[in-house]
Image (cartoon, rainbow, N blue to C red):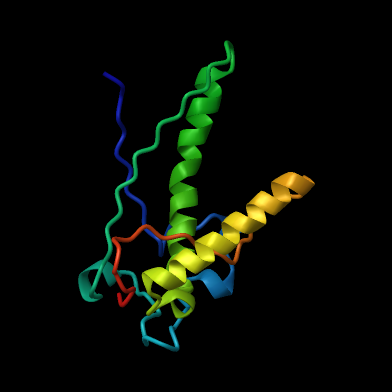
Length: 143
């Protein structure tokens, strides 16, 4: 059985110096649409609703001599990436709050077309402004 490490991460406190931007800092951000923010140190006890996300990360790097080093490095980077992503999702709430599944599917279709066109032309790049979500059919994003 593989070894499983459970890591907690905090979107307010876990900031890499390279990730710090005022527009994606939950300590500074206030949503114009919902009035949420800024988050304070004890926000998990004082804010409702609170989202808890569980993510399973599996890394397989089969290259003799580099496997352990690459897998270890990758696992150390995931908390930073998850924290950064969820900070940005919180700070971009005005962009997605109230979207329907149809709205999200339209964004996904547009992103897929851009990726397909880019792969044909050799210029594929994932737009940073688009955020993908996984929801149940018919859900409305009113968090």
